[in-house]
Structure formats: structure tokens, C-alpha cells
Image 1: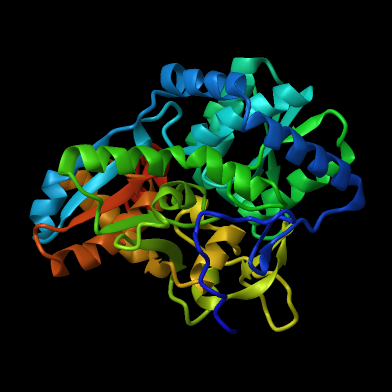
Image 2: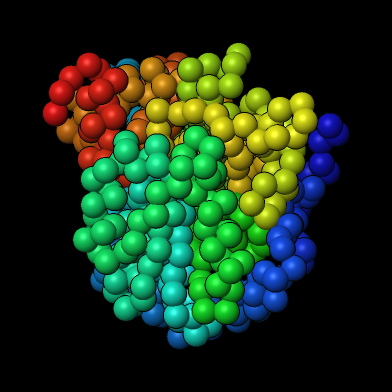
Length: 406
């Protein structure tokens, strides 16, 4: 495939059709098109509305706890013996991950559009918890679709969602993971299009979702950029984030995209290796196709059937990726690398021991890549790793992997 022409800015997309180069768009059922167009119109009005921005800012500050901290990981830096490592502490947000940033923005859009019911999909459960949280805060009934496999391995988050008043519907189709949950949520949306708002959790789906989720999550990178300039007097040399659908990553990356001196690395789930199908590294081992309303890199077989894939991490267990990431990959602005289950597990344990911070298994993939490159870098260089969530939800999975009982 030919590389796309170098744009004047990597922060300009998407175009009016929701395309990032050849990726993105809106491939949806006819019944959804009026709603998608209405959502786009309402989003375009909201993002320029001072009242909308003020309400979101107030909730982000006083409800979610922003700005999140940029923390110098002294223990990990000393252990690795190279560049300075900083964590962007999204794990400190209300509900324990970056997901609340997007959910607050979208619940305000749902209110603006006069919707009466919220649906969401979730993998690791963090988006489900954040969706249930904002639905409770604003008095909406909420249904969360979650793959049966993920229900089993993320039981603490399932209980949290139910405590918050949400109905959790296990999905048994396919492998019972995030792809299958999103399929069911889309079916619900088509059926209940008039009164229902679909609160998508990642920077994927039909336009305008990839754009609006990115913009709500860009608070991560905007803060990190300003905090780094304040603490170190310069920009970082490298920024790293894990990529499933890619919302935490695009949130960190977007404000840095035009800073050519900053190397940007997205980390995919390498699972048990890229030789077979037990991974979710769509940009390293996939090819372009259409899934969940957009064209992007996907894991698929020779007949174009979507593969289920595998990851130790429920939040990275998705056979595709947000379309802007696909465009950034082909533009060579962002480098995407796989990390294996075993490497993520090692990073999870090391970070817990040397920093007293239990990271989400998703975030541990990003830390694992930092563990590879930091020792090769100079001590005056700087790496930011997005700590997208806390690891309380993963202790049962980790214990099982380590052969321990809780």
C-alpha cells in the first residue's frame, strides 16, 4: 500500500465524511443514518457552545477529579537504569480509568439530544462502570452489553455496574468478548433508535464517534503536555499508550501529533504471539476492512470473516482499532508495537513492586514496552507512559495466571 501524502498537520482529520485518509466513515444501517447525522449536528454545535464546555469542565474538575497527575516513577526509573519515566495517572480518576472523560462528555450530549435511555458496550468493564456512573449521576436507565467471557474474568466491575443501577447483559455469541458486546449494542440501538443514546467507549464506530471520543479524551494529552513543560521545561522524547480500540492512546497522542521531536508509540496486544490467531494486534497482523461502522485495520481470515483474537487483557481484546490510529500507522507518524501476555504480566508485577501502583493489565502492556526501550535511552531523556487505569479489576486474572488462589 502506498503511503498517504504527508499532511500539513496530523491534527486536522477527519473530513466531512468522517474519513481519516481511507479509514473511518459511517457504514451503518439506513435506520441509524438519521440519528448519526443528528448526533453529528448536535456534536458540532456542542463543541463550540460555551455552556456545554463549562458544564463539562465543571464535572471533570469536581466530579471526575481532573487534572490527573503526571507522576515521576522514580522506582521504575531507577530499576530500569535509563531514561526518566513518568506516568500520566488516569487511574486516579473517579471510576479508576480514563473512561470517565468520554462518558461525561457523551452523557451531556445525550441530555442535549433529549434521549431517555443509555446503552453501552464494555470489555474490561471500566467503560461499563463509567457509563453506569454517569447514567446514575444524571438519572438515566442504563444497559451495558458485556461478553460472557469478560463477565467471568471481570466480576468486580460487573458488581460495580449493578450497584450503580445498570443492567448488565452477558453476550454469549462468538468468544463472548468486546467485539460481540459491541455487535449486540448496535442491534439494540437499531431497534430502539428514537429514545436511546449509544455511549460508545472507544475511538471507533461510525463517524462522528471516533472524532468526539478523541476530543473528549484529548484532555489527557493536553494536560500531560502542559505538566511536562512545567515540571521538566521541555516536551518528552517518547510517549507510550496501550491500544485496543484506542481511546486512551489517541487522547494522549493527539495534542503531541505535530510535535515532530516527540516519538509516539502505541502498544497492541500480542497475546500468545503473532504467528497464530491468539493475539489482537490488528495493525501488525491485520488488513483493512469494515467493522462496527468504520473502515480500519482488522484481524480477518482470507474470506474477510472477523477473527476473535485473544489477550490476557479484556480491554485490549478487540480485533480492530479506531480509524485514526490506522491512518496514523500508514502515515508513519505513530509506531505500533505488540506486547505479549507474559511481558504484560511481568510489567504488572514489577510496577506493583517498585512503585506501589497496581496498573491495569491494559496499561501494563504500555509499561512493558517502556521496560524494553528505557534502558537503551540516555538518563536525561524522558518517557511518558499513559497509566490508563488501575488494576484492582485484574487481580483475579493475574492470580489465576500465577497459579494462586484469592
